[in-house]
Length: 310
Image (tube, rainbow, N blue to C red; front, side, top):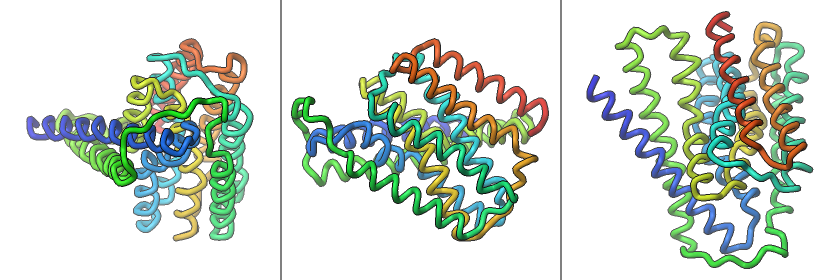
């Protein structure tokens, strides 16, 4: 038990160090090339923190566990908004820029509403996977074309050389991935020793585990007053999870998914991004009130899951 606790502590240490390295490297990359921090958050940071979901998707689909793959992706996206962004918003009111309101959030909502349409026949084919990957590529091209910070922003001084920035970003992603894996494995072992049910472990520890990189990175970004990286990380991660992770999984092996059976989770995913968009659209920021509504909704969501065994 003590060994598992120490290893869990080591996992959290790696998560925090990884988040610091990823944020520092990403911020300096933005400064050096006069890039928009929201774009860095949507791409590099989001890809780094979505690595666990991509790994779970590939391993899961190779094992024929399509429900676990889709469930992990949908659960992670709900958790990203309902828990991670909500907790981050309680620490600090998160201002939202025009680009996010006009383009990035609508893209996220459109993608969230798109995948249920493709799963209406309870089958995700290789052709549909290719369509998802093409849409993902189109989104990447759009973000690349809008990568530069507005000319009204002053040129910011950077601290690191190119090799240092690359090292920081790669080491950050590695530490986040290892830290999340170590934390989840040992937390599950502790939960089993305490005789906590497998259902509770699945919807709490395992679900939160793959999203630990997003959680720690978003909190570190806010503490460093990098709100654009924080919200960009969450929006980008959700888009990466749906388009890239589902696309790659379906391309490797087409799979079945019972949309009716999982309708609660599917509808919950749409609900959370819609509520988030309404709050930031009204006030041009995610206020503490909005964060509390999202967090309250997430708690209710978890209670319903545990009660009904969805």
